[in-house]
Image 1 (cartoon, rainbow, N blue to C red):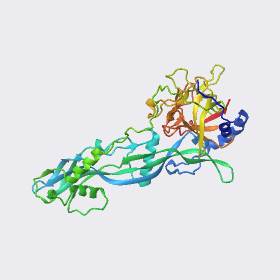
Image 2: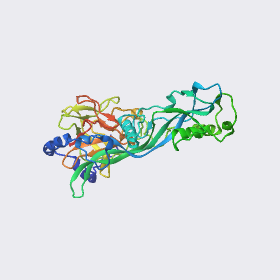
Image 3: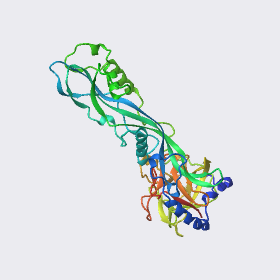
Image 4: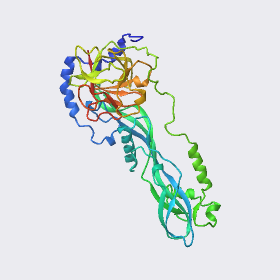
Length: 425
């Protein structure tokens, strides 16, 4: 089933803290019950590395905003002459200048991305778009009452908000005195985001005094007040785009589109390249703490890993080994090999970008979709959280029931159902 199954004694030692005997689990059950009901910080918007978390948070994560920037941006514009006799209310159809699409890279389109955008807006004190939309979907018509003849720039604009984020995960941290505690740490995974505030509309003239670095100032810049067009007499109505508008549109047209294909994509499903696994000697069940159900691998290739009760007929489908284990800053990384079907736990490549995609098993290959970060409770407890390395999502389930699928959730299960127990068999 595998090319290599060499016991890794040094790795086995590193797992002592996460493998508990039945007696130890019984002793720590009361402690876990107390810690899991301890209130997590009520305001997750304010979480920072070093804040206290609980065992119930092991299967969750939250974005941590590193940098933010808000820049006034014109999304729609039209130069417009109003001459004597043409004043009054007019509806002007503007042209699209800049398209801003809401995006969060490095994560599936789920709760994590929404929370990242909310935190970015809160950090800047702005109301921002948190759904996956684009400024080009906004109406380009502006109705305005022109009170006097002049050369106007009719515009719609917004504040484009960009920045970077990291991931906050709950993991055990050793204190200066040698004791252990659960803390929010900056876990693997980071990315960037783009969003924008509600569009505002208006008109501006060359002779108007406007605040610097404002949306109106950006519109006045597009009006190109020093150009011959601005100085010349002109019939009432639309004015051809200025040289600056034409130049700016060309720059945007030539810019690379978001989400372009990059290197490092996961291997395609069905790859024949098998990984040579170096597995620790221990065999484990991945249990629901205090409950009889645990992860059970599928017999059929089109099925997923489900919660099942272990019996004499389980055929080792409930037995897992941790393979090719590494540890970095207290976070374990491993492949999860199933004894019963010989496959490795994975998120299928075709559904990797989907919230609630099923966890399943496949032939073991060198693929980040088959690698998982394991977050651990303090020594003496077997509680863990499991995160897919490629998608960044945490593993959990919708409801506790026999046959329920294990799925990925971008922010994990905030009710604690993403916390499991790694129990030695």
